[in-house]
Amino acid sequence: MTVTEAILAVQRMQDYIKANAEEKITPKGLSSVSYYSPWYSYRLFKALTGLTPADYVRRLRLSGAATKLKAGTCRIIDVALESGYGSVDGFTRAFFHEFGCTPREYAENPIPITLFVPYGVKFRSLRKENCNMENVKSVFVSRIEKPERKALVKRGVKAKEYFEYCGEVGCDIWGLLLSMDSLCGEPVCLYLPEKLIKPGTSEYVQGVEVPVDYSGDIPEGFDIIDLPAAEYLMFTGEPFEEEDYSEAIVQVKAAIKKFNPENIGFEWDRENPAIQLEPIGSRGYIELHPIKKAK
Image (tube, rainbow, N blue to C red; front, side):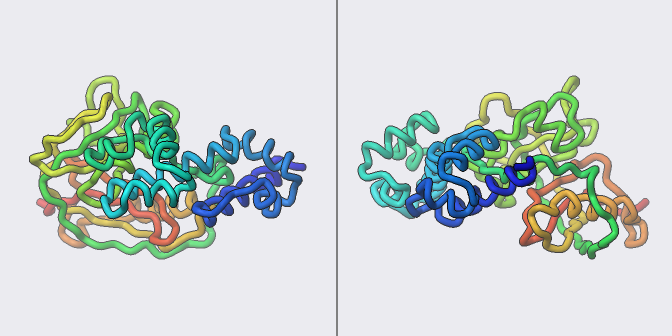
């Protein structure tokens, strides 16, 4: 078996678990999609994900349960049963072990918790340097306004982009951000202007946007920064297959580099942060860059 074959086998198991998250996941079921024996499938899965299939499923279901509890639309007993637990007591013990609070405590006060983000193994080795620029895609540009707001951010050390940031902070930070409310409905990655960079910290940070009058909790290790109202150009690439995300990012970044805002009466605003959104294949890769009226 080659390394590529092993990666694809585990990816098929991850895809199977995602598609059947609320069903009973068995060694036989995983074996049917990996095309290897149940025993060997188990070994492959643990070697490449760092988790046994059972632990992977448990963490995935508990994070799904936390999302439902935060929405406030389900009873705890219903969430417990949907998550594969036969009793509220068993669900409560597992939830507390994973997140450090009980389901009831979280439902009543949804504090930031680190949700499990199951990154596909076949995407981990892809880097933006290995991209094919032959199949040029369209990049759509629109102008939007963002209001005055604040951002809760986790700073890195020297990072200027995602891979460097993950090396400094860890990729699990995204799971924590997903548990937090954001004005734009999702976490953001910011390329900070010089005035917002603390000495010895990174240009690239991740966080959530919050109202200007935010008075909630600030997670340990986070900073809160002020962001003024600003106009942005939003660059959106075409939808892409998830395994092509690196190429999709490079395509959009190349379009941004070529774009001259002076052609529409603006110039780049170097006093506000650029914004990167999570690459999601169904909507295309998105970056927002601040602009101001040209002098």
